[in-house]
Image (spheres, rainbow, N blue to C red):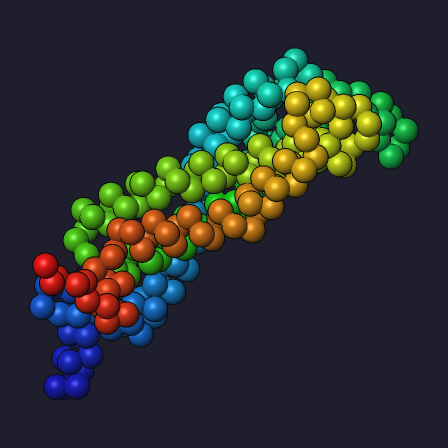
Length: 221
């Protein structure tokens, strides 16, 4: 019975956070972060059609200003609502021989997995609930901007390299070089999605980082 009570107390502390005089162990935080991350990933995926709306609207506005009238809009894919369907007025000959206005699919979730990652880390941290909510709100905005970056540069990359000379010329006329597209696209795919949530969590939990690393600030005058 004593062992059962002790185990329940440990789980309660782990799920509910720590008081100021109780230090969260790194192993506990990693286990809890993984569990929260799995839960956050499910929420993030099943609600992606909703939290992707601001990303779609912002990316649509940016591409409209960059590409002009040849770009029509970004709409939600009718079959899978979390996917974006980019619509243009560029004539394109498809493999079946038909020639219609070019349209293609972009997946914004490729650039947004940092949100469930941040959710897991934040919920596992032994800080006040309101501070967790504030960090998650700031994180949502940051991850949303990363997604906008990724969608815009993936669209430009596909137009420049995947759909022939007419689409490539549209990007060139907008004053965007192939080298700039390659750099910004790689940043959006490889660097920003995992790095932004980690940096945000570290900045929001600096005291916890000091606890885990054993670093003590120099207080000597």
